[in-house]
Image (tube, rainbow, N blue to C red; front, side, top):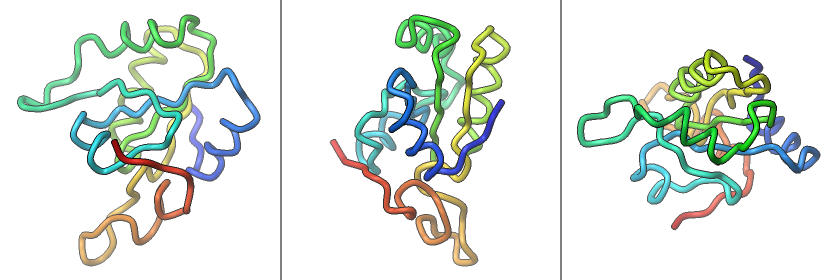
Length: 129
């Protein structure tokens, strides 16, 4: 699995038109916290049980159409997207990228996000539903 910073991921998406950006966060996070405009939402896990989505790989496969299509995965901090990326690689996807620091970034010393790194911290485009 390859890793990209949010800025590297944004640049890659600009230069690779067939790349697919997948937001693996919960539905609540995707809609209410915000997401990159081009992101497609396929949750890795979601409430109320927070179990891993048993259809994750097949849902991504439907969106991608080809296991060779570049896939960039984004979550809150890069942890869930890393697990989701590993599942896709195990399923035979060959170009999978994890976006480190995710959408909201790492926790700071006060346990707040969006202050150290991440998609929003880096000033990259995002929107709320």
